[in-house]
Length: 97
Image 1 (cartoon, helix red, strand yellow):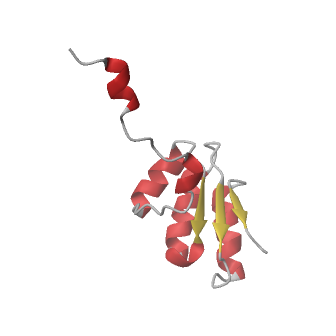
Image 2 (cartoon, helix red, strand yellow):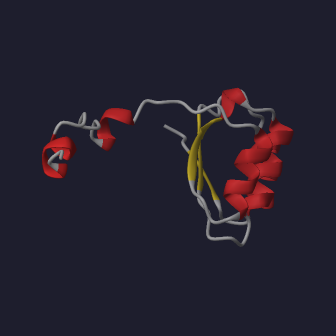
């Protein structure tokens, strides 16, 4: 009979969560909108999404307690930023650094 404690100890140890901080997941815009609509917060690279996609994501986050942080917003126009902010109604934070 195998000692269960020994088999548990011999299993590989998973890396700590901080080791995964740079893992990028391949999520569709639909996935992101669904996560935002379920109160999920996230940090997004604005270069990877169209202004229309960002507006839709912001709309999904509105009133759900979600927080969307947008980095790398240099290519978005001021009009785009205003529209994203308006659609998110306080759910979107722009990284202006």
